[in-house]
Amino acid sequence: MKNSYEGYGEEKEIKYASLGDRAIAVFIDSLIIGAILLCIFIPLEFSFPSFSEDIELMIEGFAAFVYFTFFEYRRGQTLGKEWVGIKVISEEGNDLTLNSVIIRNIFRFSGLLVLFSILWGSFCGFIWLLIAMILI
Image (cartoon, rainbow, N blue to C red):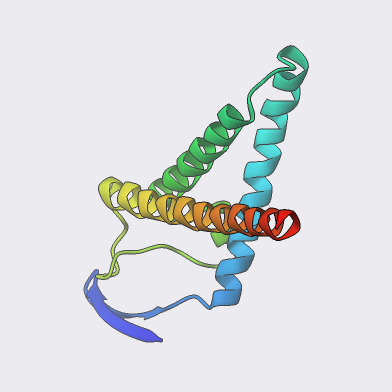
């Protein structure tokens, strides 16, 4: 899908990234975030063996939020997006404002929380049903 917009004295064409390109970019970004977190969590695990998984999950989510927000605001693209040639812009074709990047990422991560809670709830419901079938 393509749109055109006027910017900087000329008309430019916006080409939307394919689903495959977006998936590759997210995969690359996930590897980068995972590598950074690995460098943080390995020393923490040795220093604090009883380190809570809940705290780990919160740190992971916060790190991903900061990574996406920082790179999308400062450069218009994360390292994964840069690798596949994707840039995030506004509907008018301009760079995103800090507010729009923060809102974009809040919705991204709140959507993932809903998805995980549904999947986890479905899994727990399935286990509960399986236990009920075995016991009854």
